[in-house]
Image 1: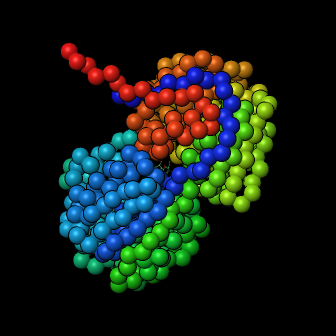
Image 2: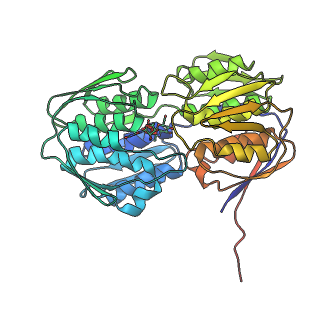
Image 3: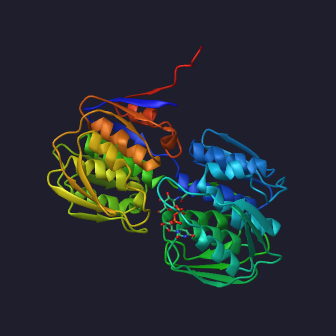
Length: 423
Ligand code: UD1
């Protein structure tokens, strides 16, 4: 397995262009199945999760090419609604295919995406939403078969604003007969991007970004060209890395409005942040101040996907901070690894009580999931001495060559491939 080796203690400095958003690109790729023809999607990041989604689409019969950030997808040749189990297991986001397959073929055969390192991650709201649109759902062990001769618009209230369920329902409802209303919908920017893409193909959707989304079903959608929004979580990771190393970094291709909860927290910690159009400048010469209490919640509140990274900044802050995780129950696993680097963190139920220490020390640590892995990289950049981060395939799911990106900002970080065993 590849590892990252980091010589810490060097402030990050320089300019970086932020990649397209993984969490916007994945549902957009799935939604492409709703139209028949050649669809071009720009700013698609080069990531493991994107490779898995493209492989699934190929398995369904599509032709897909991903070159220099652009995906060209021919969906006309798609011929099956059955997602093979091994591919389904590689990525939870394959669940996004349920809505589009059901709308296009009247049937979707998928598998339970199973447990996940960060928590149970149920799909009941996805299934309830599709049932409300008229789908019949049969569960045979971990196999799920959805069928609907004709999807019909419905009023759907989500008991929790699930990002994935909102997206699955939007995609299925785009081709349903009549009007669908989703209340208590998730408001994440990626949902607005999905609305933008579907409307560019001729869908009639309003309200994404608010808690009520209205979808007026249309007969068919037509292929289009579309550009994915910048990745707010990658941008946030770099902003925090700049602050934790007391560096100066300029981020280009960002949407500062998508990062307002992080910017608010970082300013409270005393980090200097300047915004100019789509450019964010982050600078921090002094030690950060503790932030009394941060609670992860659905957008626009503080995102769970930046919880572990910000925790690293707080391990080095002056004072005691509290970070409460309310979205995923298994998302504090990085705490043990950070403790091995000298952090002083106590976990009480779903809250981490972080007592700032003057410095972290390099160690060999293991990425347990995507964002926890990114947090350990930040810790390694800020720490004194050498850090080895193992299990970095998790990080490759969401960051396009993180070591290249950080090296451009002056970090001393390299990827080591396993030495082949010749015996
Ligand atoms: C998406 C993001 C992920 C982010 C998360 C929360 C993608 C590809 N992934 O994941 O990076 O961390 O939003 O911002 O966009 N839940 C149910 N039943 C369901 C669905 C969800 O109980 O049917 C629960 C989950 O267990 C979890 C919470 O709702 O506790 C949030 O999940 P959800 O918003 O659906 O996240 P994802 O779409 O999986």
